[in-house]
Length: 190
Length: 190
DNA sequence: GTCTATAGAATGATAGAC
DNA sequence: GTCTATCATTCTATAGAC
Image (tube, rainbow over all chains, first blue to last red; front, side, top):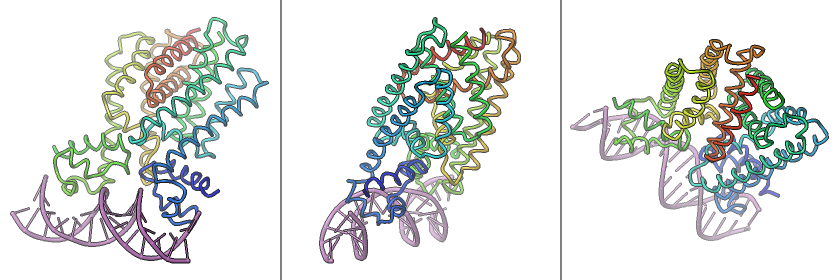
């Protein structure tokens, strides 16, 4: 379907240049049609953008849930650490993360409310699925620590590593990952 | 000086709308001149942007160094925790952080190298000044932990909280701050 | 240093033929 | 559903008067 193809290309263009920086001409060009033909599939640029954003939320949650399902039989330590590594690695290959973060962190002001609502749904869902992980594995970390606390502090480190990834220095990211994990694991186990 | 005034307004416009989304007309308008008059102060839009960015790095480092100087007599625990709180609080009042993060995380592609060089300088300097803090206070946390590790994992949490701040839900940020701090402090002291 | 006038290109969008 | 033709608007930028 051509509208999906348009959304795929739009995702990359919006990720690279932002909403205002991405032009319909460039998107159409890469799909192999004229920019006017886009209007047969989407009402306007705003419509294309919001459709792309809604897809990207779904996609992002799906990737995370599939990961946790795959790793379900592993230990807490293995699940969490491999999640950090695999998710960070994905950034290089998949523009969905980049688009999603750019849009949530710095939304075009005319979409602010819609995007905030979407990102709120996303983070709530993310916290819920990770809380499950910590709830099911209470025997693998200090029993004095609330699962909610363990989950929230893990996700904060996750976000912090995303920032370092955005800065774009792989060596530094590597050092931050091992250091953060070292202190975090000490923190929830000792 | 009018060129400083232009940079101040440009900072806000770039922070809110990004490089492509901010127009010279809007910037000039807010300063009270015509857009053509900007060219008496800056060669072009790129020049205005890069000048604004270079100022913002200097400003950001200055704020951090001044903070650490002010709090120099406090304990490690107090310094780090108050840094997190005061820095996050500043985001609401000062567009410099917003502009700086937006530019470093998602640079306009034509400036990619210059911005990467600037952000590299910034993060290196940030790590250096915080390493000093940890080096001078080795008696306040577990002696088995390398100061570098303690510093890097602290800055990762700091970045993670910045992300939560960008999402824009103050209640959730508050919970993440207390949870992360709880686990982090356990991690470096026990 | 600021203004008016203007160029030249690109943008999002619409109308209508096929 | 895609095309050509076209429109209105906006954008960065330059030239030259004051």
